Length: 246
Image (cartoon, rainbow, N blue to C red; front, side, top):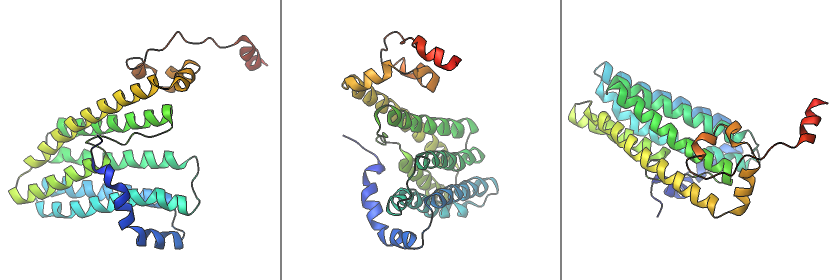
């Protein structure tokens, strides 16, 4: 059974339909929405970091609002692109890069209110989780967004920690938030890797494809080698080499 806030995304998108209609009518670019999500994440990080560093903890009360705004823009960029018929091969790249930048902008400033090792550990774990989802998309054509600690879940954890920090007058909730993101991300990444392994092992076509590409050149070979047993690499045909020589 899949868990995580991502499961309610369709419901969330439906709640934003009027905003979506207005954005499409005004021909707002989906890339602009992605950039807006990054900007809001920067503001979130500023509120978290400086709220604790300067002792202005009341700033943390804006974090849940900013987090909700970020998730709203993240939910809208894809649907706006589809309805505007502006989808293109670069779209997924922009979406993934903006999401990673937004995660970094939100999680890294926690180093100002919690042990830096915990803050950057949480960021690293979040990036690992996202990477497993992208690898699944590269190998199967479908991104894996399942698990208990996806993007929306990380945002929710930071939002709850902010409110708890104001209520307790302490930075400690952010340390606990980091531990929760680390543990949840490791569980999520592991589950995605296991799911990917099963999908590949049950799909002969996928295995055939993997046998005929140099996965190590794609930068994922070392990770996949521990998950899927690959046969010996297929040698490049001599006529291909002759073709490059011409």
